[in-house]
Image (cartoon, rainbow, N blue to C red; front, side, top):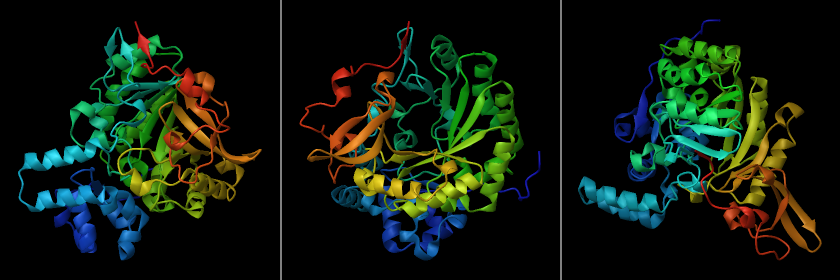
Length: 445
């Protein structure tokens, strides 16, 4: 394997406890500084010097997409909440008093959307399995405890509760024993998604300690192992010059040699993340280890709400050997008011970007909402008789029989999420609302 051409880099995190001592603090205006001070009490903030020195244009920081993607903005929490928290911080209140205000704000931000905590956790012999989710028939999600952080945090992240230090609302597992037992029993499961956080913040040896029991169990019906990660975008040196970067790539090779398809589900939100020499070399090394890289991200205001941006992202991704996979709709959690985009506009952006790319990039699907009943694909709008409607279908669903079945919602120019929609043609319910029984997904006796 070709050795990297880059000097070793030391990971230098920037977070709310040290930001005022970093050069980046001086690049910001007073309003941006105050937003970081106040909003980061509620929503987790972490970035690093690779992001700030290679991806952010500080000449126009408040309007820069990567600045908006990684630094807290004042509008991410309600103005009244901002003022209340600001006043408490300025009053010299105790840590417990500040925490009480912060927790009150967080509880109103829908910390666990789409039934993550209430409906997606499977059971084994009547016991809930910590650190696992099983929402769709073919795919199990696994959350290794040491992988529940990231090299930098996206401000839109729908899993922000993973990072706020509250173990009661955090998915995590300290071993893969239960995972292996559960996979053995669920012959319909073909895909394992290891996610977080970001599992690639872990040392290669630690990641291997989770993966090795799965590989050694020789579970024939498990065909694919996915790793959900933004390491390529936020810290490409993980694959280049980190002390165990070669060990990580050898682990990838081991997964492939074991007969599993290895897919790195890479989060790329903006083409600038694909613009540096380190990320290009990191992509080359990952692919040379036998892994496929699929790229996905949500469509979010202030970051990538432009068809030209998405077209450029997909074109550059394909050029580097990536497979465009999903354009998501921003989930109904956290600072959704700052990022959300009406569905009709989301579809226009997708369609105009889709029209600019070749067939190799048209593997991408979207706009897609990962909502409570499943992944809902907004196909487009149509005029049926006298009624203008949204045309939708499930790409994945709690009930596999719903997948691919078209359904219609009344056109609403303000709707941003599935829950904002009402059935078309005077119907009282969508078909899945009558058919779905809100019980846990998977139980193994």
